[in-house]
Amino acid sequence: MRPPAGEIFGLPVEEVGFDSGWLHIANQVKGTEQGLVFAPPKRNKLRDVPLPDRVAHVLKQHVESFPPVEITLPWFRPDGPPVTKRLLFTRLDGTGAVRRTDFNDRTWKIRSRGGWGDPGAEAGRTPPVRPGTRHARLRHFYASVLLDAGENIKALSHHLGHNDPGFTLRVYTHLMPSSDARARKAVDGLYEGIDAAPDGPETAQGL
Image 1 (cartoon, rainbow, N blue to C red):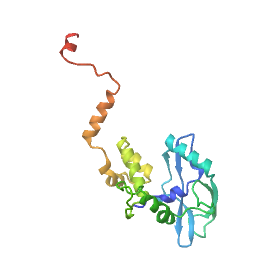
Image 2: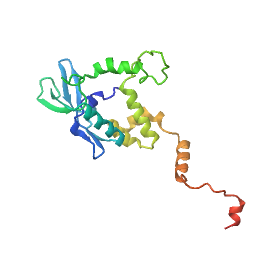
Image 3: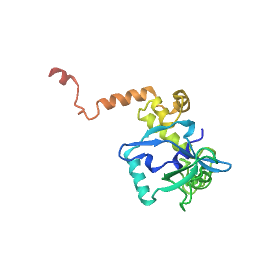
Image 4: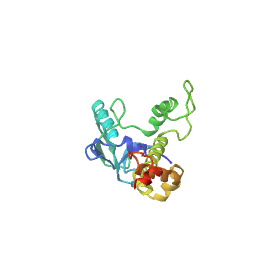
C-alpha cells in the first residue's frame, strides 16, 4: 500500500489547526509525466485528522525555522488552472514543491540506512533499503499506536483515508491487542491509583 506522502508535501499551513487540534487534509502534491500538480487527497478522502499537542509544537518550530513558501502548481492536470498554496514542506532552496520519488530515493533512503527504516539496524551496519521501508513504516507505526490505545477501526480508517473500514481491519488486524490483553488493561485501569490494602480475613472481620 503506497503511503500518501503527497499529502504531507502538499500540506498548506492554513490547514493546520494549531489551536483547534485538527489537521485538514484537502489536497496533495502529485507527480505526472509533465511535472507536479496539486490534486485531491488519495481516494478523494477529504478529512480531518487529530493533531496531538506535541506534533503541533514541532510543526510550530518548523514554521519558525522554515517559513511556509507560496507554491503555484496546476490543479489536477498539467494543463489545469494554477493554484497557489503556502506549503509547510518545500525544496531546500524554496523553489518548488517536493517530489515524492525524489524524497524517497534520496533523503528517506539515507535516513533508513541510518536506522529509521530498519528497527533492527546495528551500529556500524548499513542495511539494504527494502521496498516498503519508506513512509509506509510511519503509517504502520501510527496505526499500531492508535490501535494499542484503543482506537476503533472505523475512526482509524477515517484517519488513514480508507473508504472501507473492512479494508483497514484486514490490513491492521494483526496489530490489534488481544482480547485478554485488553481485559487486563481495562481492569488495571479501573483500579489504578487505588491503595492496595490487604484484603485478607482481617478485613472481613472488620465489616
